[in-house]
Image (cartoon, rainbow over all chains, first blue to last red; front, side, top):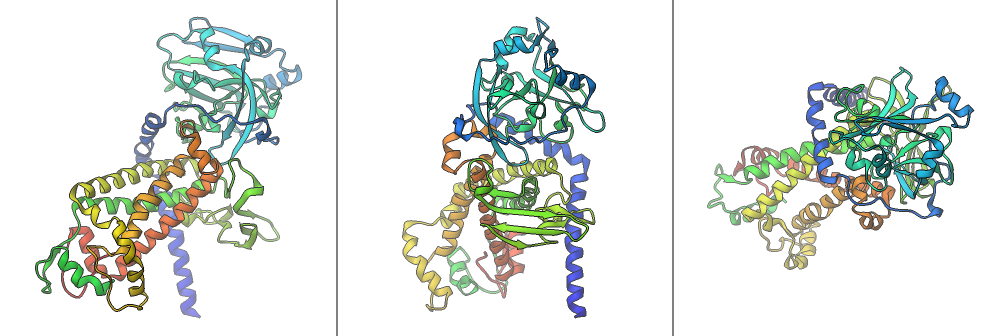
Length: 246
Length: 286
């Protein structure tokens, strides 16, 4: 009996040691850049090619999951909910020839893209939604990115518990992919507050965490190194890869 | 396997089988890629389970669908007692402390699929699991490619690939192992069953585990829609990836187990220094 107890407790110690070892390796900050270096290889290999599969209306997931920070509760966003987004303006600035802002009606007039695509979450699950919105490539042609512009940065109304604003970015190739859009409708209705109203990003060739919800303003930049954590997005600053096609 | 060592080695190039003679066995590329692959498979399997834990279920469908769930690890923490369960093809088993509700890697227990000692890192961190997984995926692919290309150039690969002429010898070899036959059938450096195993692993399982992993990437799917459809969709590909990982890991355990069982000292010596000494510890290896 004593012997069995000894075997059991040494096994438990060995197993606990296993987690300690992998935790320590993961906490070794010097390894991070080496591990992250393959993101550039993944981006080069997989890139932004081809077209995401188009689904049929019957495939749509009716109970579309909400998996993000909480719906913004800042007064400026609550005000928008209250007036039905009538006072919403989407300013576009930074490295553009024609900085301007768009209201919901103007955006609706530009909404020419209907697509039913799969949303792949970084956690591993998949759902399908029917989206309608403004092709981001068309939208960018209106504001005319300057030659030095390389990235489109999306700032959200959303903030995490620590007050950090949510944001994300795409390069111009990803932004002008014909399936990338500023979405206004989900499953035939204007997007509701929980799903990112009134305007959210929809990019079916990338994972869900790139699909910035509750877009507040857009900026074109040559580099995102000096924006917040410097990794090009809220989730990227938490350690997720900037290239999310994988 | 030990019994076949003598004649096999003689054909493999040893001029004499006198004890103490040193025999060249593995090239530098074979040794280096084996060690690198060993580490890569361990990290890939463990970081893969870390990633799995973010959505601890597998579906046999394109989209996530509880109606097509083949595996689900669930748990709940409660003041009146915490419970972990594993549901496989609809059959639920209580697995508290092992699966579903288990070791959190920080000295406690929590609701999570696989326990911390099986994941990389131990604590729950999806972003970290992905970093390790994708880094070692490249290492795994590059080491595998180096092994196959070097083996092809040296001609070693030809010795372990199953050929049509080996097919009639598969059963006699199995019969020999089952002691239904006194002598193994005539064969080269590797016997027909070894060749079958190596061929399936190198040119079947390994490409499959890579392709089903890539199938989870939305960027890859955009250029390979028909392939994803062939796999049954994205969630099905996730299930295939898990199943093929189990099969590959099964081979890995058997392979390493045979290293131990067929003359550990000489096998390790061969895999580190490239050669081994004839004597008590003979073996054609795993």
